[in-house]
Amino acid sequence: MSRIMIVVEFELKLEHKNDFVSLMKEHARLSQAEDGCQQFDVLLPVDEPNKVLFVEAWRDQAALDVHSKVPRMTQNREKYTPWLSGRKATRCLAD
Image 1 (tube, rainbow, N blue to C red):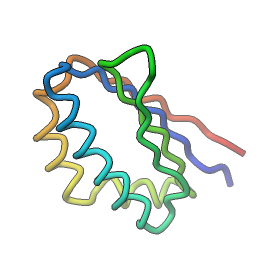
Image 2: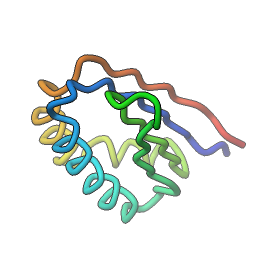
Image 3: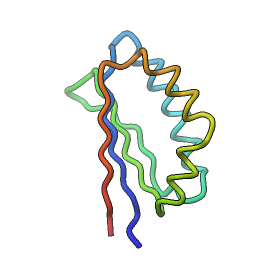
Image 4: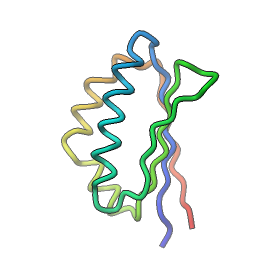
């Protein structure tokens, strides 16, 4: 069975970057403790200060489904959506 990798690119309004990064680092820490999370990194591109990337790896779809339903997902999204000017998520399968 293939694990699931997700790369998310957030484009931020710069005045909210510090708040967003703090919120997402805590989200990543909590996500790493979830069953089936194999990787959850918050990356700050050197040459693009308005972007933040996530790289996530999940054991399988079932683990990702559980993660997507934790209450903080909705709470975080409601909080950070006004801070964004764009978002793109790419799902990949890794053998």
